[in-house]
Image (cartoon, rainbow, N blue to C red; front, side, top):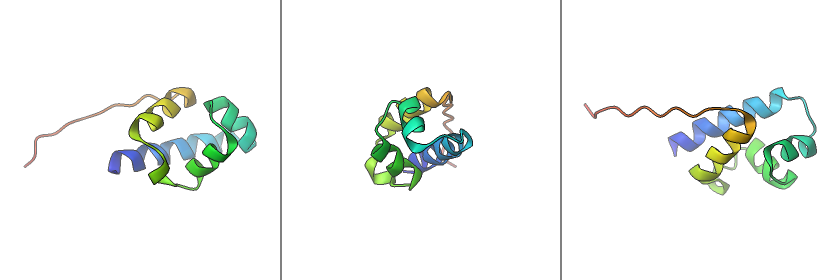
Length: 71
């Protein structure tokens, strides 16, 4: 859940920085406008980690994963 939230926040920041209409931003991400609206409103339950990974690629973002041993 934490990973999904971090990716969603990064996507929201990038999309808002485009200064495009939701329709244009949705087209750029390859999703519908209602789907983009769900993203921008933070409806995390509607997005799997895989779906968010796909959106990051369309947004020009790279994902880096770091694993740490539990203390």
